[in-house]
Image 1 (spheres, helix red, strand yellow):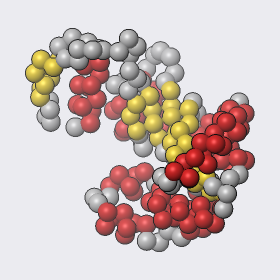
Image 2 (tube, rainbow, N blue to C red):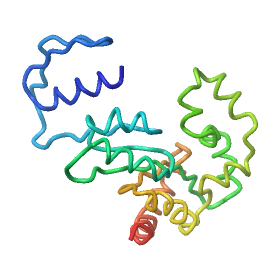
Image 3 (cartoon, rainbow, N blue to C red):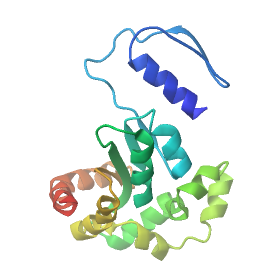
Length: 200
């Protein structure tokens, strides 16, 4: 279903009328009338060889939440000749001055992250997430997500993505209140400088 959806979106962004008949979707004479001046890059999240092989020929950007070096290799092999594609790693951080408070917030809001993408992708709903994350302790979260206000800790965790062949990194701040986001954004210049140095 997602393969068909990406194919339709790609065709629409290429311009002209799109007709499509698939197993899941049917499109009759659809068109995007106001196309942007520059082609919109399509990014697709992947978790293993199958998703890389399915989507590398269709998308421009690989997105993943784990610094798995094999993903970059599978993506490039499936994409074929041409410029190496952008590969974006999504890395959670829980930024704030009180590390213990950040660990608590990350455990409350993001402990599902510890199970890995393959586990999370198969969970049918909130009860499944609650069951799968019931064994995750705060110290487990602190071991996999940078918590607190250490630039070095964030840069160290980011290094795994760059070593695995990722070209870009998207930091996901855990905690949506205004003070939490403001503190994170205030630290952005220092974090960006450290990440650039880590990326080399």
